[in-house]
Image (tube, rainbow, N blue to C red; front, side, top):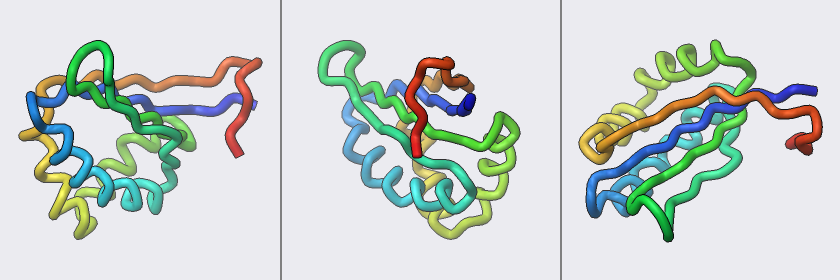
Length: 106
């Protein structure tokens, strides 16, 4: 069975990793309530400094716009989500589909 994922690769501003982590931990439950599942969140220790990669399992590609729109009225998003743009230098987004040999998530 094919699974769909949303990957966000974010280059944060210098020194913004702690502020990102502090804010983002409050947003994970918001998006999980809207049907996304965080499958991993990572930051580089070698490579492009202050890069964060988040991988979400999503129902389908339409879920991205729907959830992002719905999240904007959530109290946690209003408090923490509005802080994120000031922390991000660059954002690369991708929708991914699992390959047939990829092990499924529960």
